[in-house]
Amino acid sequence: MNQCNGKISKIETFGTVDGPGIRTVLFFNNCLLRCKFCHNPEMWQEKNCNFSSEEIVKKILRNKPYFKNNGGITISGGEPLLQYRFLIDICKKLKKENIHIALDTSGIGLGHYKEILEYIDLVLLDIKHVNKNGFKNITQKDKYDEFIKFISFLNKSNKEVWVRQVIIPDVNDNDKYIKELAKFIKKIKNVKKIEFLPFHTIGFTKYKQLNIDNPYINKKAKDEKECKKLYNKFQKIYKKGMK
Image 1: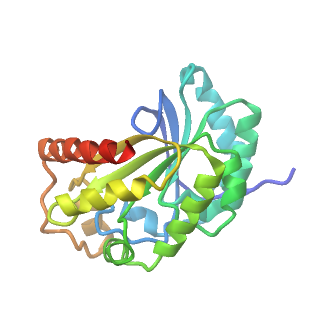
Image 2: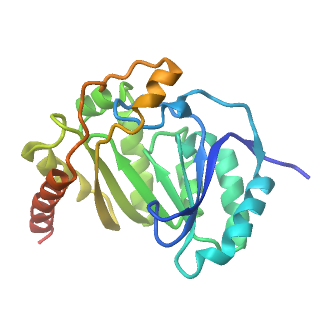
């Protein structure tokens, strides 16, 4: 039997924050970005192939009874789009089992977006920044055009979208940025949910363990109450623009 091998960093069962219901979360290894706020820098070190799609599907099917009506699988990372053959192979097999598939992505892959999105039910879209200069500064990579390219395919697919935005102290926690963000998100179709995720320092120990420079080492975690206030302000701007 022809097996499509892939690189998986970890598998989380009973996830409840990466999509609706109870979910199995697959963390695909590797990422092209080097986000200054990344809390999983271990994903940057590329692994050897360690799973076949058949092995992954078997693991997921064991959890299927817990998915109930609105659970399923979330494919996260790292960046799942970089392993598009493996991703598509898993998705094809899971759709035959009628399992809901969410894709958690920054939109920075290697193309093949149209085919990938055919098998996805929900896209959790991570927005790094809304303009080219800001994107390059935060991700330390010049990949903004690829992000826009992915959104173009996402809009054509008309898949359900949840937008996620990490709020970083003294970077994007200001009125100017949230106005730009509201304007940007209006260009994305079928957005059903928008989340503000406060910057945290939980992953800081990993940088030290891996001997990787941490550009935000002196930043403090974003206060959750302040983040919520900013989100409420954003919602007023966003809803006003939708009228």
